[in-house]
Length: 208
Ligand code: GLN
Image 1: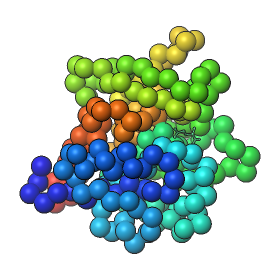
Image 2 (image 1 turned 120 degrees about the horizontal axis):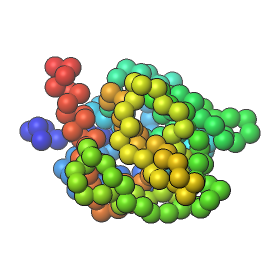
Image 3 (image 1 turned 90 degrees about the vertical axis):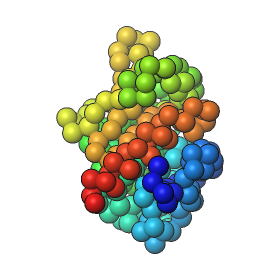
């Protein structure tokens, strides 16, 4: 890692932000809880955590964060959305609550907000992720979304084989944006956090 530690913010409006902070600190990152637009300027990267995307979007609206977050993501800053965070980053979402929800966008995909909802509330499965190495990743899905449409700008990193036999996309990367439908911060395997740190470092050296 570079001599001065990276500063990564975790959007702390609602949901599983503390677990991300802890994992980042274990990796030597300066991790901060983000609640105000002006905090974004000090960050090298931002994580939008899991939780409830409709609630998170409404709080972001109330706290004046929607536009600043759009500018952050569309400005090419490294951003990782997990679960509800992945929904916020999607350009389109289906299965939303009545009245819709504010999305931040930036990731050229369509997500189904509760893709696995009807079959099961939560489950754990081993994912094959070539970018993380040979060892499968133990992914925890909680009322998880999935990507149902994807543009060729985004790269598929992982898929889940569903009981109906179809493969559904659960992790993607598009430039400096990473999105996972599951919760890597709830496991002890920090490979996704390390991948995000590598993406931030690559982004920084590309813009130097
Ligand atoms: N499906 C939830 C939503 O709509 C996300 C669940 C999660 O983040 N664990 O926000």
